Each structure stands twice: as C-alpha cells, then as structure tokens.
Image (cartoon, rainbow, N blue to C red; front, side, top):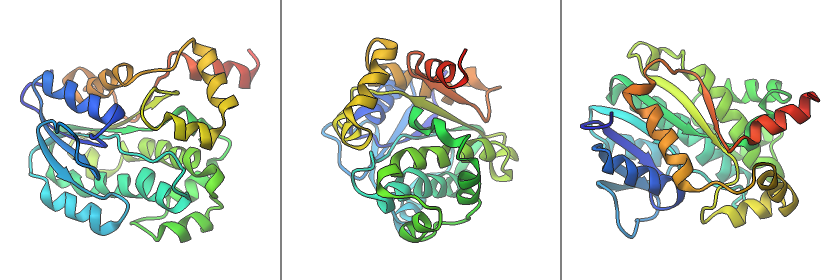
Length: 261
C-alpha cells in the first residue's frame, strides 16, 4: 500500500527514523530521508536539515518537491540538550514543517507525528498545553518555554504533550482537511534506540525500568516503524486525529493505575 508513494522521513539517520525509512523503501515508497546528521547508508534521496530554527525548516520545505504523499515526523530530542532546543525540534519545528509542507502534499496524504507515552500528561496539564499550542508561528523557543513554565527537567514530556494536543487539532486544520490529509500520532514507550540512555538521564532509571517491567521488554525500532507506515498507507484512510499507543500495553497499564480499575 506504499508502492509509488513519496514519503518524507525526518530523523532518518538512526533509530526509529532510520528503520521507518528502510522499511518504507522496501515496501515500494520513494523515500526522502531527512536528518541533521548524514546517515552511514542514506535511504532514497537524502537532505540535511536543521529543524530547530525557522530558517532551517523553511530551507527544508524549499528543498522538498511537490507531490508528497506522507510526512513522518520522527526527528526528536530527548531533553538533555535543554528546554529551548527540545521544544524547538520536538514541537515548534515539527509543527512548522507540517504546516509549511501541506501545500506540497497530495490529496489524501498523511502526516504522522511520533509522540511518546511521556506525553500522557497532556490531560491534567490541558490548560498549559492549550495555551502553548495556541501560540502561532515559530516563536523564540527560550521565551516560549518561559512563557509556559517549561523547564529543562520537564522539557521532553511537555514537548510531547504539546505535540499530542496539536495532532488532535491539526486533523481539522483547513490546510490539511481541505486536501483530505490525515494527521495522526504514534506514541512509543521505552524503545531500544541510541538515545535510550539519554532518556534514562532525563526520566530516571526507576521510571524507565518500571515502564519496561510493566510490559516485559523495551520496544525496538522494528516494533514502531510498521505502525508509522500503516498510518501512511491507504489502509489507514479513515483514521484521522488519532494517537496510537505502540507500547506493548504500557498506556493501558498506566491508565488502569491512574483510574484505579
């Protein structure tokens, strides 16, 4: 269901992004790989890009062709680089790229945002998330963080909270809806990727180990990439504005504990 489709995959140099690009290519998609770092073995056409600045995002949009069928927003930071850069890449840059690329996307296209189980807290933090998502454009990341009370310690989970709420809103944004472009999210739990050690330093070993113990093992890029590609395919043509928890049952466990059932 991906044969002949043109798919942009950000974060394609390693981890989930790399596997998503590889698997999309094997399934017949024309892949455009995007990353700040050049992959050892780029999949399809490769474009180096920095998604942390408005200029970097615009340069990428200008470099991409018309006729894109799917955008997989996999690029992301763990939070160890500080709140400003984390929010810039994980939310502000991702949003700007998606909105800016919409005019170059085909009818019936698909945007897939890789969020995280760490963004589960958007519901109790709804007021903050609504206020942040309501800020348009690409504001100065440091000022944006200060305005919404986001610190280094909570940069990663908060960036994913903002991303999830924006995903639900974007599914009905005229830029996407008028072209029948679907916008969905995938939320992994702990995944064995090169930045898992960074997540341990951000979230703590106890939190990460507890999450892994709940479901029996950490995920792998091979577990997550097929879900991203399903959302990019025609098989998901009636799925829009949804977050798929691709986490071995972790969200279900957390939800049961939070609601005491």
